[in-house]
Amino acid sequence: MKFCIRGKNVEVTNPLKEYAERKVSRLEKYFEAPLVSEVNVTLSVIKNKHTVEVSIPVNGAILRAEEKSEDMYASIDMVIDKLERQIRKLKTRINRRARQEGTQRSVFKEAFEQTAASRPHEEEDMFEVVRTKKFTLKPMDVEEAVLQMNLLGHNFYVFANSATSSVNVVYKREDGKYGLIEPAV
Image (spheres, rainbow, N blue to C red):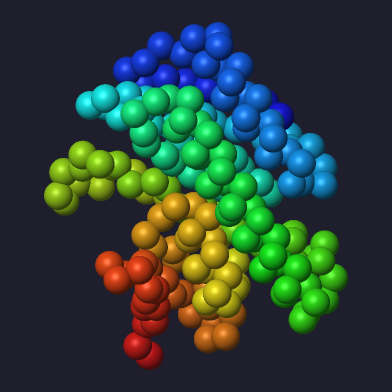
């Protein structure tokens, strides 16, 4: 595993860097082959809140988690716990789907083929487009799209619906449930 650890408004000391690397390396046990992609860890401090964000590209998809607390080391521990839960949840769904549809290897490969949408910036002007992102839409069902959205930590996810062959959007509602936007034909 290769690491890119950077700090915003905080100096990344060697003990902090080593702690983050050691904790993130624990996630390798969940994968069959060692990860060859670069793991991005961003440590930041804003208004006495220590934030840790970890992004791990895995075969075209991105596992992502972010946590805030009063202590940087506690934030690292919490973000690793969150990523472990995401990976276990994903593997459970993949195993369930594999039993229903086919082999586990093919389903696991399909689950990570979708590329991730960009993370929105917090301070954007109302009508100024500051970034354009292009990505391929892999056909998937609504449940898989919700799973990908949750893995990315986003509030919405654009995908090609395998049932209708159209572009759809799933989103997280304020009540914690999910919504689906379909085009009217």
